[in-house]
Amino acid sequence: MRFFLVFVLALALLAPSTGWAQIKKETSEVTGTMRLVSTEMRSLVTDSYPGHASFRAAYEASNTDTTWTLSFYGFAEAATDMSAATQVRVQADGRPVSTQDVRSNTRSMDDSILEIKHATFTRSNFQRLATADRVAATIGSHQFELTKPLRKDLRLILERLPNRKGPSTASTEDSESNR
Image (tube, rainbow, N blue to C red; front, side, top):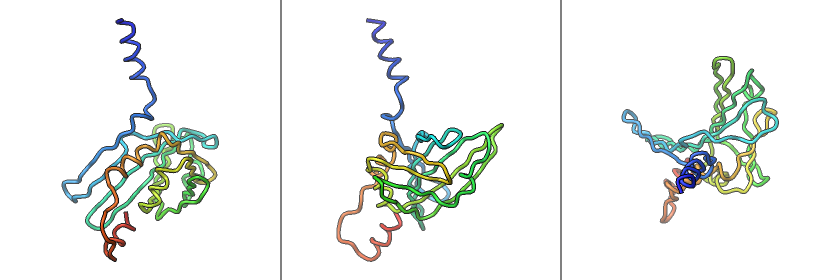
């Protein structure tokens, strides 16, 4: 019996984190900005990137703006064309999904490079990415797959922020399009 309990505990601790997707809520005491963000980076599937690639999902709401973001992180020995890329091309179930904005950072870390792309989306496009069967991103010459189990964080964020109910007005349509 003891062996069985140890075995079950070991399986629970070693099980892949795909089913354990979690988000956390952060609120800035200074600005009042509220963020829902993945607690962990999620691995991207790639054959073309010469290092390890991950992503995180986030929603951020301030008094003036709302953003829905996927951040892509590439860890490589040397900079790749991901650093210089100005676009993140995303497809959901084979159809293009447009980004609103793409911001980039590149950092040196010990003997490697961290390449970062932050792509923002409308709420409806973020939702398409969350619920699609297949999602792929191309950054520079590198292609990445965001598997459905690892996109659970996107769905959890959307569950925490349900669409507003009631009649649409010009002001709610404008604010919804920014989400």
